[in-house]
Image (cartoon, rainbow, N blue to C red; front, side):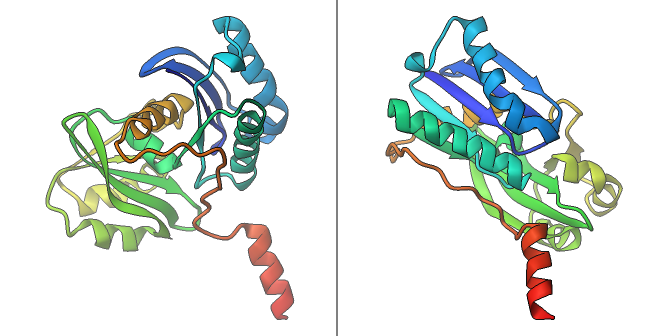
Length: 232
């Protein structure tokens, strides 16, 4: 099975093609402001260098957030267009779950993405017997609430994501039994999107879908500003 995976949820625009769980090619660009201009050329380069076309793709995988509101919409719109034209099924993967796939050490994995002003996006996973299981669904909350939530778990926790980097000193103070991902593991990538999508495809309850919706977890700053304006 060949998977075209796309991640535009962060400042890095990443495109990869996997054969099952083997990475055939990965291309990326780290200028968040140009995702709308760079994504399609990046996909084209990926196909050209791998000698593949969209006709060779069996599954589309895309990050559905949380993360950059604009970036998420760009990625989802692209895979939906491909699905419409070629009738290829889509699997959406949260950016928090894709981060967990960067960690290969068994145990609890706390994925934390910085949402500014001490707020974070968070989800908890567990890796056991080479399988990633969702322990706590994605939420948006302040870091202290997340710390309180995590204290109910006695197992060792590995923290991953830029939110874990921002709040590393506080997390170290609160959790003696923990690990922190390295710089490479903290980077969101389409490869992890593809790996997660492959696992989801092979679950017994998998049913193909040909559309995808974003997961924002909180309102955009534009929506917040509009609500403030209307309340005056």
